[in-house]
Image (cartoon, rainbow, N blue to C red; front, side, top):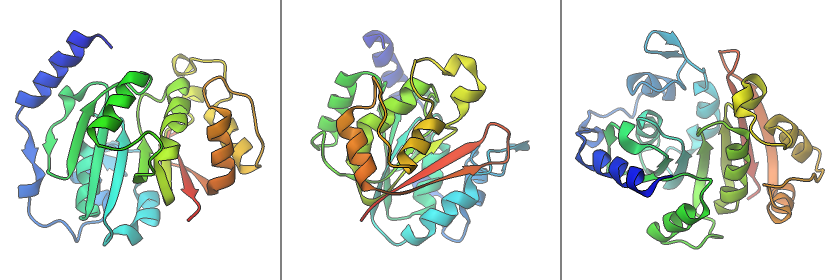
Length: 247
């Protein structure tokens, strides 16, 4: 990422007027799908009069028991902040750390949402991010990690390789649209197993060769993952995976 462009995006983000969701009326009674719809996230069943991905019921299934817990969420790929806003309203004791390559699209503000403009494929940016949130690279810090980034195969694997180690025991690592590289050739950008194949290898406790996923991380995943469940959403290209880490 060009440093000047990064700085320009940061300035635009800082001066851009945003909607302060902390001033919104109480939304504790709303379902996650109602919140996704309200904040205009395509994770909803219906999104701005269009068919959404339909991920709501799966998030409800896994996150409903976290409503009264203090948790930290890492969201990779936040765009306008719609899903981050939805999560902090659905999980009122949560804090969401948002990573996006272009934070100028962000339109929601909350004291519970922290926004960082970075490219996860750049190691020096990841190091700066750890420093900003005052953790070491190996610290188990997040209760939930959600990858809804570029959906490029390389970035999907980089995300898992970089951040799985930061997931707390008992936490969830969620990958949205993990089959996009199967559907769209331009996202299949590296000579690696696709994410569907990687998931199957991990489910079967089998090691595999990768130039991106390190042997150390793969060994950690194989020994610590409790289960991986995959789901089909409402659209033909909507696929969702939940990794649950052992307590």
